[in-house]
Length: 271
Ligand code: NAP
Ligand code: COA
Image (cartoon, rainbow, N blue to C red; front, side, top):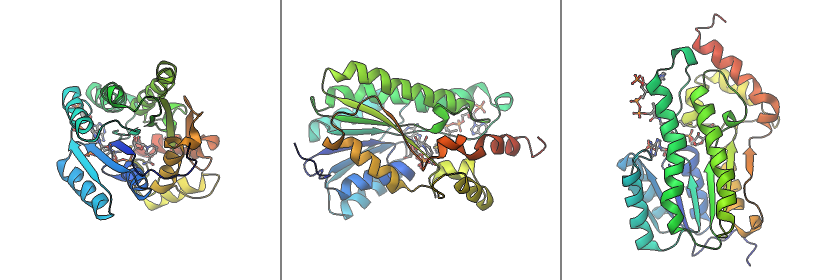
């Protein structure tokens, strides 16, 4: 058993891997020798990510699919399996988010986020299971602190990501017998990402958020990538069913008052 973070000869698939945190994760695996495939809705983002990874000298592939469309997702995964064989590591991180207080959130708005984050995660799990290396594969779901810290204006995300973590924990039971490990990573507030742009849209809020992180800074996609390398490697050979915050301690500080801030923002500052 190798104890090095060398992913040469390994196949890594990152669903939702064409921007932000997940793209950073894909690039981390590529930088450690893996051949990497990414998938998301926008073919332009897929092509750009594949080109960027290839330009770093490793093999890359990608396909466009909406995780809400099981047939399209399954077709892309199947094609990849035929081309590259079994998957060593799968990261599932497609998600949608916007702030809205429950009384203002439409039925379709709630459904949209639950469909992407929760049903989408199930779709990815179902599509990839036949393609995983057994024994030995590692699956990582990208969750969020809203899964276990209630946050105002985030009822859709809280409900969806709590479900994602229960998918992780349930599959740790079902897939353990196949030698497949599965864990969630819970990013803290990650600088320069779409998620932060939506929840902390101005520099003052971003600075306030950073101040609420016990380690005193926003995270980077690389911070999340490093944790994914660990969970994807033999270093984590006995780790399964874990919900791992990678957040500088933010969750221990109740996400630094983000809940009250979002409620204030969404009610026009009159709360
Ligand atoms: P992002 O840049 O918007 O990344 C989302 C990715 O998912 C993109 O590649 C997007 O590409 C894809 N995607 C979105 N909807 C999809 C769909 N229906 N089907 C397939 N792919 C879809 O966001 P991010 O802020 O980096 O967040 C990445 C992950 O980290 C998410 O799971 C999020 O919940 C989690 N997270 C983020 C933060 C943060 O601070 N940013 C904190 C905690 C957790 P397309 O547009 O091409 O589909
Ligand atoms: N506030 C309140 N409701 C909103 C909203 C907002 N900012 N943005 C979208 N919605 C509602 C829409 O009004 C619609 O509901 P309606 O039919 O009752 O009007 C519903 O959500 C679906 O919107 P739509 O734009 O059709 O969805 P989509 O499937 O094209 O996109 C989103 C999904 C809304 C999540 C979109 O923001 C997205 O694609 N996000 C991906 C990127 C992202 O969120 N990154 C951060 C990850 S942490």
